[in-house]
Length: 223
Length: 223
DNA sequence: GCCAAGCGAGGATATTTTTCCTATATGGCT
DNA sequence: AGCCATATAGGAAAAATATCCTCGCTTGGC
Image (cartoon, rainbow over all chains, first blue to last red):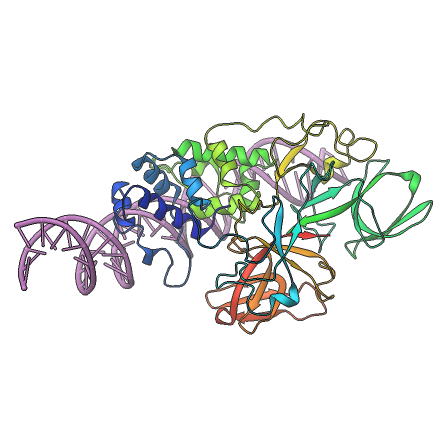
């Protein structure tokens, strides 16, 4: 990902790496020497200023840097004071992220001034599993509005075939006729399943199990 | 190095990778649909047009791509043929999972009898943030029913402070008074933000920016 | 075959970035 | 202490990008 802060931090880091100030870097790149003034990074109205990719290209040219070099700086691979993991949490494991309850999030002491996790008392949660941990996990991309308000066009649903499904779970169902839908499992008996629509404007559906090709639980949804 | 041709080629390749046209990619990114028109890449006077890094950031956000992904495209690498991936093979890189459109999921040839991914034609999506790639990402656990029907008690929301937030995004907001809430960002001006409630039974809210401690975008929600 | 939606060309306009400019501060050198 | 080059803040103007708009073409669904 590319954020405003990261772009400018990376430019600062690139300058520093070449023994330059932001002003010196700009001049070296053939830009106005005040182009990278810190006072110009945020407008008077509070709006962020984003350099053009042309300016970026000129800077990379002038410092004989590759986009990879810059990318590394964007990712902040320079030593950071605050790691991405709060104190007191479990040691970082691949795929784990810090977790907190909503109620706790209202209390003080869990975030720094920028809204990043800080302090102690965080739990961790495993995230969709590495494929090696949950074989067969895949994603489906939502098309259209039939699943509003939960799922919007373009959202990505992560599905885990083989996962246990209980009443109330959100599932993807494929019929033998080739229809694929996402709904909430209301009830499953020995012969039928009842699905509740995610969109009140669409009807609920019931199927004989024999009509169903497969059903899998949705485990994550992009927002 | 970064050249005008490479930038635009990479944007075209990124669009193609996500089954989009340049116009569709621009719209997906929240830009004007004509923003990436080929006719706009070179001015009438012959001058090259370079997109801003903000536009680039929006595109990467919208496609959930990393700068590395983009860099590979800039360098002219083509993504690996994805067809071989679900056929019993693990994904080529940690954290990737197979991706398919809902409409395509209805067709034959993409699943085996048990509902596991099979066959050819799958795309891949990187996700979710490796902590090393998205510093500061954390999770909040929902408590109560105030965010039904989108979020239920016990759901986990993955939040990315520092991520770019656009109108329509689902966000977590913390007020200076210590109240934390998840809503949809309807509008943000220089001084205020308007939030739409996820639950129609709860009121929409507006805040002065000075009342807000921080606001962060929700990127994934457990189901 | 019809129609709606999407795509893209390209012009006009609005907004944003870069350049130009002035002013002040700072550090190195004499 | 004084001079000079450089750095940076920040405003105004110029230049560039993004948005808005119209229009013709293509495509897919009905």
